[in-house]
Amino acid sequence: MISKCPRPDGTAEVRFTVPDAFHTLEVVGDFNHWGAEPTVFAADGDERTAIATVLLGRRYWFRYTTFEGGECNDEAADDYEADPRGAYSGIIDLVTPVGSESLPAR
Image 1: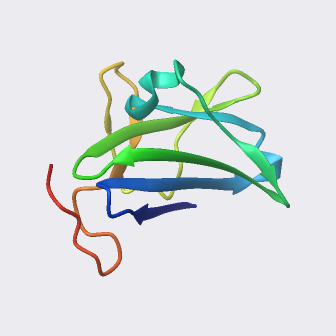
Image 2: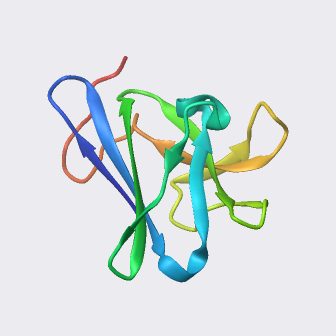
């Protein structure tokens, strides 16, 4: 599951949630330089959660990395596109409205 919470300062908190059994290590994407600044999952009951703060008004590529060394997409992504690395990655869309709120363009 992915939830997006816009903030008045022009950012959004993006929360990634997966089942604990998924063994996800981190979220990588263009918002964290593909893991150079890792967004790590932490145990949260029977789930694992990772939180990233990103700018509103754009789309972000992302994938999950696993303890087994693989990468995978989230079925809850807003869209999927080829990223600059050549992989087919999920998209977090912070250009189109979240819920009933309209997000400002950047």
